[in-house]
Length: 287
Image (cartoon, rainbow, N blue to C red; front, side, top):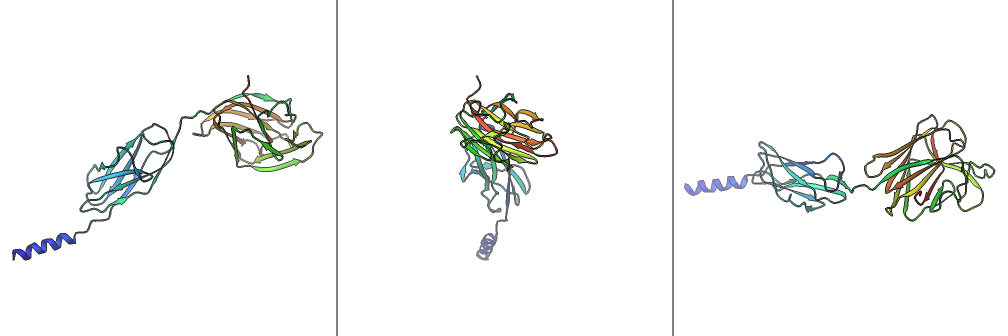
């Protein structure tokens, strides 16, 4: 009879099935500066789960987080990975529970964590120019330029990426009107713009690490009512570095800035029409 009892115990043990578990992962609410400590919390739900969790970044275990023990009590327990080792970039963090005799293994969905480098972006407003109008040659653009609706010749150190804009040409050959910008290569002038009823963003990445004078030409060609706010933002964290409000630019105005690093030039329509910009010019830093 003893043999029959032992066989029954073995059959019972063999029939025990680990319960299904779930693992969820939470982390910091936004991007972090490189070197900052990031804490990721894995929550494992099962039946009194015990054991450990491995935290991985793109499939590789994070240093110091390859076997973090679950803590707490009851059917939902946690493991925390705190690390300052993540490099600049976008990371896919996953938490994987190894399981135990009564709880099956499970893994979380990836958690996306962005780490950014200390910013070198800076911006200072140098002043407005109402006198030059469209006669930019010999005044602006010695390093490069963009004449919207005509041609661009940006310097090698400048990457320019607009978004949120549409294109419009008011007049293709207003050669007698000094408000219209001189064309980049061909003779004559053009009155054209990028425009938006809300916001234009121009991502300007100055890659050489130096300061440069960057000039915007705003022209309210066909009215006198446009009003615009120009913000210069740090592209890495959206912090506003400088702001100018523009009105009364029917005759054209050049806005001169000293910029460094990667910035967003944001033009916001603050009136009843739209916001417009007709040209962008690059020069060495002002003396």
